[in-house]
Length: 172
Image (cartoon, rainbow, N blue to C red; front, side, top):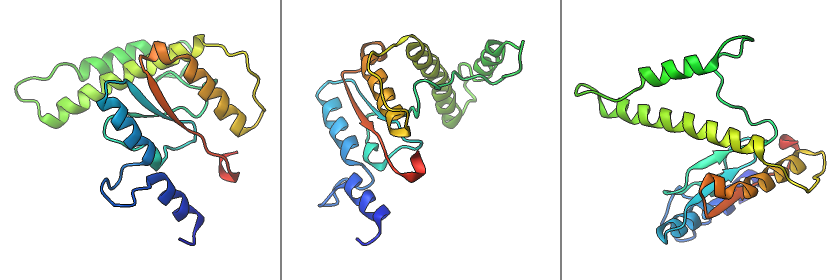
């Protein structure tokens, strides 16, 4: 395989019979668990999602740092009310009408879902505390995020999580 990045990709996808092209090893595991009735999530603490998390059932959540996870704030100016713009965005993407296209309906649904999930995760991460101290490194920050996400599993409504943590020069 020669190149390091190619080797990483092959390991993360690991599909020796090429039966599930494009789906990662952890994503396929979560698909099986979801099929057995578990509520699952795949979470990347690296700055980008990994191929190993790609599956059919579990959404991929990227949370590089629980301590700096941000609530969606379209107006960051001091004294402004971000909820006013969020309410306007929701109004613009409200219930569809007879003339609405399938694409606009799907976009609207995902936008509303994304805003709600962002607010939920933000509130949960603001409230959680952990007793363990992790090193002051990029890897330590990722492991701290994993610990916080594990502690919030009940609030997030999941039974099983798969986490992707990455170490390397470009991630520190």
